[in-house]
Amino acid sequence: MLKIDDLHVAVSGAEILKGLTLEVPAGEVHAIMGPNGSGKSTLSYAVTGRENYEATSGGLTLDGEDILGLDPDQRAAKGLFLSFQHPMEIPGVATMNFIRTSLNAQRKARGEGEISAADFLKLIRAKAKIVGLTDEKLKRPFNVGFSGGEKKRMEMLQMAIFEPRFAIMDETDSGLDIDALRMVGDVVNSLRGSRRGFLIITHYQRLLDYIKPDRVHVLAGGRIVKSGGPELAKALEESGYEQFIEAA
Image (cartoon, rainbow, N blue to C red; front, side, top):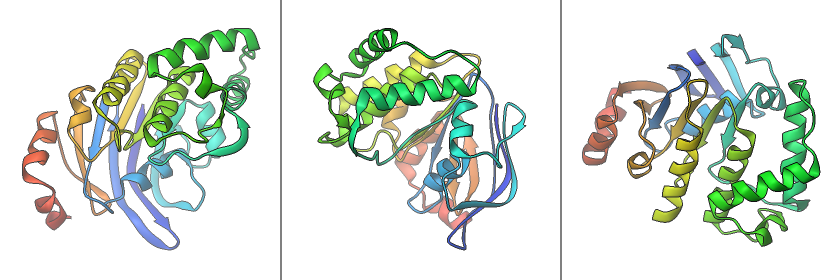
């Protein structure tokens, strides 16, 4: 599914990822943990094609297809999705119009027909109930006036609607209470399947109580320095990252 091979990424001339290698097979959920400044968000931006995150060497493929040369919208059409650590507000842009336009753009790029307004309304209302967003929230400009937790619920709404082939979640658990954490876990678990993969970036083991990962990786100094099973996340909660920072 997603394969990263010796990837080096620079931002404003400074190398952040320094030979990162990682593979997430179809049907698996992997978690990335690591100290601040280790390159976790840079990894998510590099994979999804954010501007100014320059891959200077290495490889990145999705389902065996090289995607390094693709623009972000082209990568999205291939099935990549990123849940942002800090979702942005877009004043003047209606939430339902934004999501429907995004969905139809992806469908068009894949040669699929557009979803009608009536069918989309049924879809978004059904998914909104799952993530705990009211009709009133759906009628607002995109994320405007939302709390931090509500913005994360909106991220999960989009993921539930788009049903991506591969989803990257960049610290989605940041600022969430117990109920919201459970909701995130429910959405991810509802989408798990043999043809879909997830990369969960988090500082804390608590989210992984709801999303049972197949593998856990420690990112430090721009590289994966340790990999293991779910028990690794619990060990990190107890011991911290100091030993991995020194190793990096």
